[in-house]
Length: 400
Image (tube, rainbow, N blue to C red):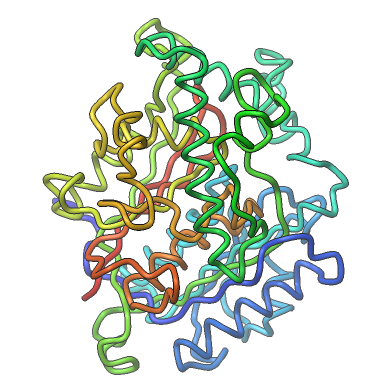
């Protein structure tokens, strides 16, 4: 019977560039930068890597449709190198390929790379999703935008759980304020200024009720991980590594839009992926056992409902935890200690690996001013698509 990959894969090195407007660097430059940090951290050379995966979403403005630019830029020695894409979950999809290769015994050391050069598109936000969604889905949802889709989720959530517009917006504002405070402590974050609740609530509306500070921006950047078996990790790094406790992914079947069971206040793929991840990791009580969260906060409402979808906050009660500071850096379960998508930034292909990068730093007590006290289990949540049509990857990481 299948038992998953718990404790079969170790992360021995990670790298991450600064995220932001990297006009003077190409996607290849960014990959080299994160790769150099990761190999130095792992204490290995390029020739030690046996397989590689590269996650990138909008290939037309990045590196093309193959993984050859990755193998060229990094001078990988004629090894298998595969490009993967799964909307905004592309970074974790890259990591999943590398982790499964090691867990299966197909190789001893593998690379997961993620990169995106979104500022080069000339868009303030994401480019058009028409091609990415496919012609049929674009015809079914001709006017959908990311802010619009998640704004509808916010409106429905407020209505269902009895929040006035101002009460709901204040809760969302506190989420953004928390992330900005964390991002200000992170030298690699795109946005590093703290904001107040009043500033967030007075910001221009993007899609009612979401304002400017409720939405993450887009960035250029790269992140990568080097994975191996725990046995090899022990020989190379002593105790200086972390292990994968669970890695699960769920993709929509379309039932959210086909039936009336889904009410728009949660993300079904998050609930499914997290349920399986907890089972794989042996987590019985997430609210008591998880030490930190790196969530896909594309919008503040996404983070709010994810607290509930992950079984951290009771359904409909996330506002109470937000008001109590439960998810602040000094709270019970810090969320987005690095600033999250909101402040670290969102180069799509790199975001999932950036989340793992922060977990790696925190679990190894390398996070500096952001360091959480004695973390045990760290969770990443990488979401692609829209509330009604999504793919979600949930990872759980810990020490040996």
